[in-house]
Amino acid sequence: MLGFLKLCDRGLDGLLRVLVIVTSAVITLALVALVILRYFFDLSLAGMHETSLFAAMWLYMGGAVLATRRREHLVVDFLAGSLQSPRAKALHDLLISVLTLVVVVFFAQWVWGMFAWGMKRPQTIPVLNVPLWWAQAPLALMVVSAALYGLRDLARAVCALKCAGLKG
Image (cartoon, rainbow, N blue to C red; front, side, top):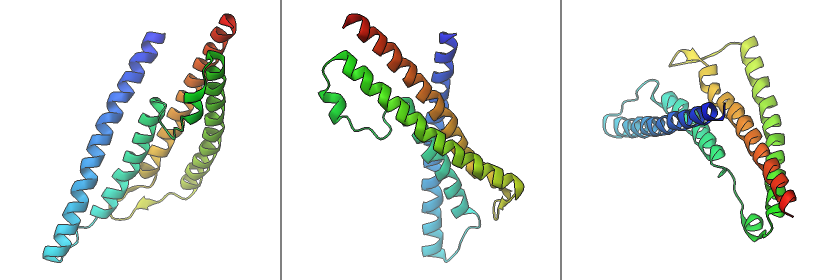
């Protein structure tokens, strides 16, 4: 089972890396095209701005998932670096994991409310004519993956705390 989970984790990592590269390219090309067309030709491409914003949502949330996977999301390691004992490090990791999961619960509640509202009042992105939830889907991706990685980190912290307790 652990082998399957590791395979899924590596697959998600690969997909997210491709997503981040592709969306970065889309944003860059869309904004460069907008600037060149407006400045030199006094033209505006319909949907180009919306496309860049749409890609930006996927880029931001995909990057956040990658950072969460690596435990690099909003890291302040001054305290963690000064802890010497394995038990203190495990307790610190446990606290961080619990706080992360608490924040994820609030974020999940907000995302669920946004989706519920969107289902009651369906809307589309005007120029692209796609449902608004396509732009909101990266938020759901972030919530689900942050919860899974938070649970992973919690399990690792509990195991480290048990191991530190046995040694101490």
